[in-house]
Image (cartoon, rainbow, N blue to C red):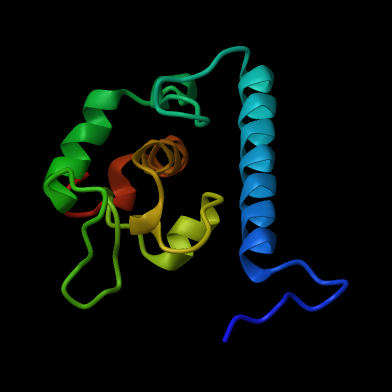
Length: 129
């Protein structure tokens, strides 16, 4: 049996599509605002490069290779650490990250690792720093 949509309400799929399009518009606007504030767009997406924070990419690549083999989706065996730089949730949050660090785009992980490195140097990674 086919049911007609309830009057006054959008069909569920139309509403989902409208929310998706609105989310895309917001994401594009946010990326443009961030790019304009920086003066350019970085190759890693909307996040500034590590060099813009005075941190060499080579230093971060060395840490990432040691911590996760450079895998941005890596998760420690006990689930405590995630991402390319094996952030724990507290440290990830302290540099402005939200959610699971291993689910964040690689450019964001690089940027947030550069923020942490600019604050503490390699000491934040006691084994690999």
